[in-house]
Image 1: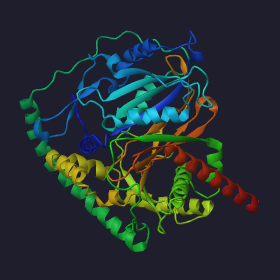
Image 2 (image 1 turned 60 degrees about the vertical axis):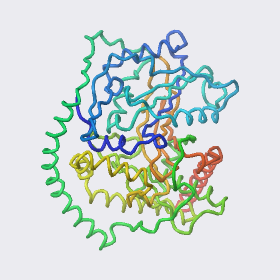
Image 3 (image 1 turned 90 degrees about the vertical axis):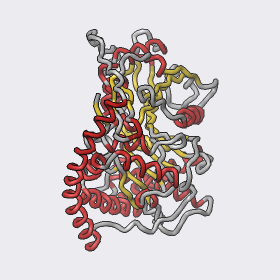
Image 4 (image 1 turned 180 degrees about the vertical axis):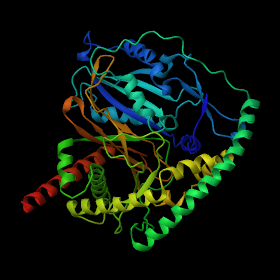
Length: 480
């Protein structure tokens, strides 16, 4: 039994029926590599059961403190029926990529049951109509709460479920996994009282970190190190988010994205994908005469991890605001501007420090912490940083090698992240390298009242990528 950090608990406090805070990984596998050439639902259930000891996500459930006087706890709960968390579905005959995305959007909209371990899995068959996917393939859609991912939890879960060869590792039979008893209300209240005194001491540590951070921010604003992103504009994607979801994704060749990146000195793969998002939003909004003169702003992953890089335990999973430079029509010039904007935003995040947000979340009394989160969610009054965002772009780890699930080989996949209050369009960038053929997948989750035609937005993403690739290649030829 151990307690959630303030950062992890934040995902629980800000959650509602209309804003579930989970992430879906959608991975497609080819069962032809399995010993029998087939992988059944029963095979996958047995596989999950055998890997329970390898990932805490699969076996932990929440214990909430009465009156929310303290942050919740994780309890070991390995005695639950695993098959109750794994459903078997099939697409209609002749279903294509859009049919899969429509089903994933439906699954995304449903919150997880907090009385159970915070994950669900769906085995989806009937993918033969999807271009580029081998016949007989199936998809594993894995839904996991953000509170459980805690920086490295997702990587641990992927490692637990996958093998490096088609022959699954036969882990030796272990003693029964421990099961924590449900703590009584008085026990939890006693812990809350004790923790409240510890938090008072932490507030002093936070104040010690905060003062130098404020001075660094003041100096950075004075000398122009940090960009001013105060002049925001409201778009169709800003407002109250409905409970429904649509999902889409585009796959881009890894080498092509690298060529784009190299067109601007110092640019990263993340900068390239931000520029693609910027271009797609330009096209989508221009067609509706809704493109503002000033640049759009995106919330971006603040942990400093570049696409394909490792994420470290204890990193703040927050967002920093970055200008998308959408007021620049030339794709290559926009990439250069996005690179500079990202540097300025990252400098601001570094001035704040990686530990300050984490320690501040741990130091705040839980009732105040949850009360502020609930007030913001119910009133629609957002923190200043969140109120300026028009969209969100997160980077998440993908499967980096030829991996196998119950003998079936990974083909491709993407992640679909949660929406946040006031922002009805969120993007997730995932780098994968199945069988040495690398790709970067740019996926999005959206509120359908704000983005009613996800298939067209997929086309906008592709168009923006193609234009950026042509523009950077032309610039390279001119230099040569």
